[in-house]
Amino acid sequence: MGGSDPVFDEMHDASGAVRPAYAGYDKWLSEQDQSLLRRKGAEAESFFRRTGITFNVYGEEDAEERLIPFDMLPRVITGAEWRRLSRGIDQRVRALNAFIHDLYHRQEIIRSGRLPERLFRDNDAWLPQMVGFTPPGAVYTHIVGIDLVRTGPDEFLVLEDNARTPSGVSYMLENRETMMAMFPELFSRVRVRPVSDYPRRLARSLAACAPDCAAQRPVVAVLTPGIYNSAYFEHAFLADQMGAELVEGSDLRVENGRVCMRTTRGFKPVDVIYRRVDDEYLDPLSFNPQSMLGVPGIMDVYRAGRITIANAPGTGICDDKAIYSFMPEIVEFYTGEKPLLKNVQTWRCAEKESLAYVLDNIADLVVKEVHGSGGYGMLIGPTSSKREISRFVKKLKARPENYIAQPTLALSTVPVFTKAGLAPRHVDLRPFVLVSPDSIDITPGGLTRVAMKRGSLVVNSSQGGGTKDSWVLDD
Image 1 (cartoon, rainbow, N blue to C red):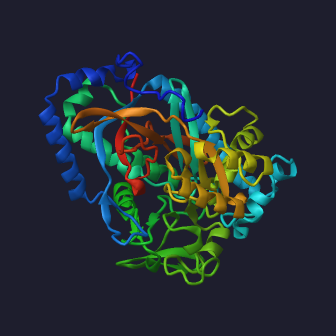
Image 2: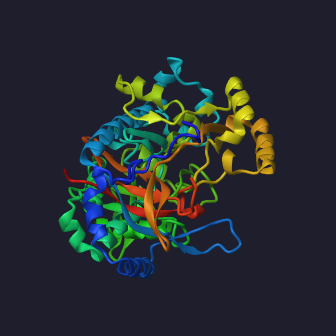
C-alpha cells in the first residue's frame, strides 16, 4: 500500500476507456459545450457565496470566511458497490456503539486483553461522568461519519471514524441541490439515489431516541456555539431543514428537572439536543467551569434520563487514531464477525518495535497525532523537507504515544474541471450514518472531498480541499 502503488482512476481505466459507473454521465458530458460548463462553474460559485456556504479558518493572521471550492464533475459509485460498502459501514457503526457502551460499563474488551487500558486511562475524550450511565435507547453515536478512501476497483479502506460531531452534511446536500439546479436534464438521464431527505430522516432518527418523558412529538433543538464557529452555516442549515430550533447555551436553562429553551411564551422543555458544542464546554458544572457555551446542570438532567444529547458525551474516544488502530479487533469482539471494511495499515508509535520502524521509514510514511483532525499536526513524509522531517522526529521521540503512522496511500482520483480541461485529483468519501434504537440509516453517497491541488493528498477544506456531488446509481 505504499506511495509507489498505481493510482486507481475512478472514471477511466488504464487504456483511457470510461468505466461503466461513469458511462451515462460521460455520454451527457460529451454533448455539452465547454464554455457553457465554465459559465455554470462560475454560477455555482456565486450561488454558494449568496447562500453563505462558507467556513472559518482559525489560527491564521488573515483568518476569514472562505468558500469551499466545488467541482461540477460528480463522483459516481454503482449500486452494487454501494450495497457492499453499506454492509461494512453498518457493521462498523454497530461495533462502535457497542464499544462505547462497554467502555463506560464492564470494559469487557479490556478484561479480555484485546485492548490496552492505557488507551482510555490517559485519554481526555474518555469521560468519568459517563461511567455506569446508558443514554435513552442505548444509542451513543446518533450521527456518525466514516471517512473512506479507495485504492482499487474493489478496495475501500476506512481512514478514520468521526463519532463526536461529524460535519459536512450541509455541503453534501447543497452540492446535490446545486447540481440539480444547474443540470436538471442530467438527472432525468442518469438515475441517482436522492439525498435531499436527509434532514427529515435525521429529525425522525433523533426523535426515535427521545427519553421516556418526551412529548408525543419530541422537541428537538440544535445547540450551536454561535455565529463565530467554523461550521455555524451547517448548524443553522440543519436546524432550518429539520424544523428544529437553533439555540445557544444562553437560550437554555434547567427548570424542574428538565432542560428548557426560551420561547416567546416562556421556557419550554426540550427532549433531544443535537449538540455541536464539544464535551468540554457542554456543562460548566461538570466540565470546564469557564464555559459560556453550554448549559449549567445539563449533565444532571442527562444522567437522570430526562434529555437526549446527540452525540452522547464521551463518544470522542472513537475519533482517537490509536483506538482506530484496534478497530479490526473491536469489530470482531462485538459483532463476532470479521470486519467487512479494512483499516489502513497503522503503526502505533507507543509500541517500541513500531516506533523503530516508523523512525527508519518516516520519509515514506504519513504520521498523525492520535487526537489530531482537519489535516493539522501531521507529517506527509514524501512531500516534506529534510528539516520538517527532522523537527517531527524530535516530537515523535519525545511523545511516541501521541502518534500513529500509516503508509502513503495511492488514493483514487476523479477528474475535476480545470482551465486546461479535465484533470485527475485525489478524493476521499464521508458517508453519513444515522443511528436510532431500531435502525441504522446510511445516506446513499455522502460527502466527497477532493484535493484541488495537483498531486496533493490532503482533502480537508481547512487545507484548501474542495467538494464534489457524490452519486450512488439507482440500479
